[in-house]
Length: 85
Image (cartoon, rainbow, N blue to C red; front, top):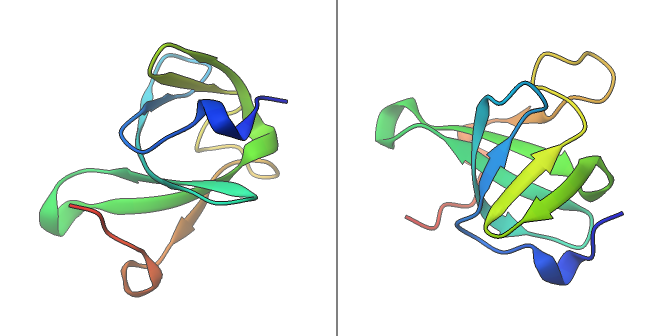
């Protein structure tokens, strides 16, 4: 498992297939809050810290993609998201 201290807001988050999921906007004790898109089209996801495969420089690489049914990131509704932009 990756050390939480390696993670911070602004890092790009990638799926195993090389697709950008978005950017980290917050790191909690248990998960990453990741957002993709801009303004009106912004989507937020929570990703459990255990799903982080590795961190290379300012990029986070996950074990799974957003289409994974059992371990994929959970989309969070806009009202409950924290925004930092």
